[in-house]
Structure formats: structure tokens, C-alpha cells
Picture 1 (cartoon, rainbow, N blue to C red):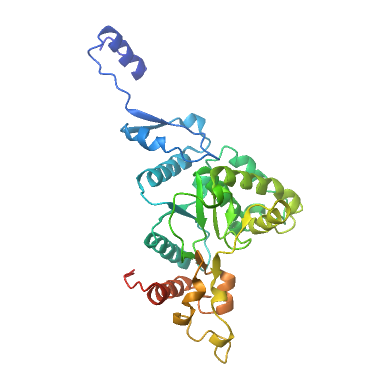
Picture 2 (cartoon, helix red, strand yellow; picture 1 turned 180 degrees about the vertical axis):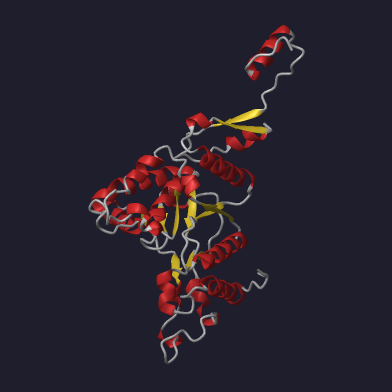
Length: 338
């Protein structure tokens, strides 16, 4: 006990110097690097961290330690232990009338993409907060003038639509969809299309997007940097979708592809009854060929508003029923019991 020191580390070091056989020295912790944004996930992390029973986070170098730790563990587990490609969605809870139904819709999204051969992962603001420029980027959206778009917590929906771009840059890039997008013919692959160039698969609507981490980081920074000008210093409504459309028009990137089908495009006048409503939206036998070549189907609020049957607080129930009908009638898959 005479060797005790106020520092436990110094105490062990002193004991080891006096009697090297007394203390067995072994490196048991894996030190996590905090500089991860805009980079592909380093697969060596899987092997190296697996050699150590303990993970060490240098929290003094991290702006938001709790968020970083939660996000790093989630993405490391997904990247290292899944033998399937990942598909992300973004969900940051906003309490409103449809919130409970949105949670149910996320469950449908997760089950559908899992059954299609992907590993579905849900991102949130914790992931975005690990970007080294997070505070700077967010400051470009927050104009502290009453009446501006995001003043005092206003328009949280579109605020989080911007934030999801940052989250994808942090987690190593890849695929993301809105949670109201379900797979049709989305063959799982670890190789990103178009050499990783950021690609939008529903015209300019970023409801299903793929790209490398570098591409996600580039577009995210461009989007935030352009916000002040495009929104007239926050006084004019501006969204990530409007920004994407402008970038496509001016720069030709992201790539504009037409591989997602809106639910409203499935039906025509012949499917409507005398009241203008789709009489039997779950009868898809004569429509199966129309889905060929499409990666996904989008049950957006706007599209559901046109066809009516999925436009209410039970969007999750009707989306699930429609999807199971498509599987049974067009894919001849009756194994989905969920």
C-alpha cells in the first residue's frame, strides 16, 4: 500500500516498474476515432475493434459525446455484423395527430425492406450531430428573426429533412428512403449505383436516394450553404426538395432517375367509382406489369390524398394491406405473415 498514488494509472505504473511480473500488461481497449464524417465506413474497424473487449471513446474531443457513442455503436453493429446491404430511413419524433400511425408505418417499412433482403436502420438527429461542422451547418438554417422559417422551433418537419442529409454523411453514405417508401424490385447490393454519385430515384423528390459518403457530405454542405440566399434570409419557404431540384437544373447533379412509382400513378379513371374514389385499390392482378422496372412504391401524403384510400390517420394499415396484396398477386409470395 506504500506505493499507492492519487492516480490509479500512476499507481499501476509504479508497481509495474518495481516488479514487472506483478502486473500483466495488455491492451484491452479499442480507441474510436471521432473524425468520421464524409468518409466511407472503414471496414477495418470491424476486425480491429473485435479484438478488444472494451471500446474507448475520447469524449474530450467529441462535441456531443452521448450522441456520438449511441450512433457509433449502432452503425458499427450494423456495418460489421450484417451480411446484407444497409438501407436507412430518418425518424425524429414530432408530436402531431398522425404520430402514432407514423410509428406503425416505420414498422411496416422495416419489415418490408428486411423481407426484400436489406438490413433496415433508423437514423435520427443523434447521428447528424456527429458531423464536425454540425453546429455551423445548423446555424445557417436558424435565422433568429421572428417570422422566419425555422424561428423558435417552427417547421420542424422541413428542418429535419435538411438534417437527414448530414446524418447520411456521418454514417458512411449508402441508401436512404422515406419510411413511406416500400421496395418493389430493389435487388440488394453492396455496390452503389452510378459509381456512388448521389442519385435521386423519384425525379427530384428525395424519397429514395443513394450515394457515397463523400457525395452525401458535398450535397449536404451545398444545401446548407445555399439556404440563406434561396430562402431570402429565412423569409421565403425553402426545402431540401426545392434545393435538389435547383441543383439538378444548374449543376446536373444529383442524378435524376425515374425508378420509383407513386401510389397515385397506379390507378386511372377506369378504377374510380361514381364518387371518384378508387373502388378496389387492392385488386392488382391486371396492374402487375406496370410495376416492372421500378425500385420502389411511394405512399406520400400527396399521392395518398389523390387516391384517398390511404389518406387518413390509418395510412400504415392501408399501406401494409396494399403491399401484401402486391406480393401475393404480382410476386406470388404468400409467406408474409406480419
